[in-house]
Length: 437
Image 1: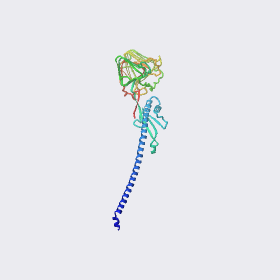
Image 2: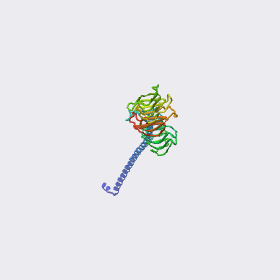
Image 3: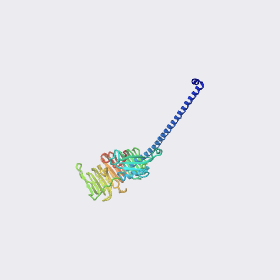
Image 4: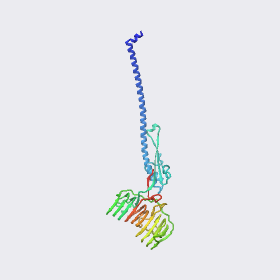
């Protein structure tokens, strides 16, 4: 009978229907389970995406802040390096960082200025200075992951290098401050800069050729005749401060010589007359045919100036002439006539690279100096006349380097100025700053 029931079409259909229901129920449960897993995976993925977006957003902000800090660190290191010879480099660096938005001690900002650097390849080198700017920056999206702030810092190292210019004309308004006239050829391996804001701050007249890496003037320039300037002067520049202002004034005491004068046929080419460093009250005067050798050291011209002439032949290695007031009042350095001069400045010490040094307290109304040399004359060193005019005439050159810093400058001869400072222990006395790291 049971078999009969199983064979019954109704019963068999019922069993089939039950099986179908069970299958549909199982599929429904599996479908709901799969949908639940998808929801979980989507939630996890969304959380991961949100975390990634948060990280990218916050780290992008941190990178922006670091870029700003790097600018401040670079500028602070450069400013501090510029003050290494002039004053308080630490204050200069921190002040410069503040102008770029990072003031030491404010808003958790730290600005450290170290000389020599605290780390890196230049950590043991003098003349190098390090600036480190740091600040804990708050996060925004990363807070949900437990990061409330991230410390951001930037570091830069700068050093003193050789300045790009070697001719500076300092008068702020003279018209002209630089005058080049006649048959003149100036060939300089370093730049020329004139501070005068006058529209005729530079004047070129005659058969003039000036070649230099850069020619700049705060105001403008005029030219007339056969004038070649290479490159064309850049006008509207920024005035430069005295690049040798940091050089200490030589000390003076008493008079080693008074109104020192040599007259006629002194010394010979094989046995020149010997002069020695000291204070020459009333200056140095030389007349007639003379052969002179200046021994190394500082010659203080305390009044009277320096006036050699009349076929005088002079030489001196490691010498500085400091021209100041004194007996007879301040007088110029005047190398005139058929004078041959072969002078070079000291290579080390506080006056390294300084050949002629005019007292900074001398007024601009004082007599200007004239440096004249024949084709055999050489002047290795700085001609530093910060408040008076200098006239360069004749034909002269330098064996290694030449520097002219003057209130006003007149050039009426041929001059060659080099920029080979290899003989100087610390390079050019005119410094420029460069980023080293």
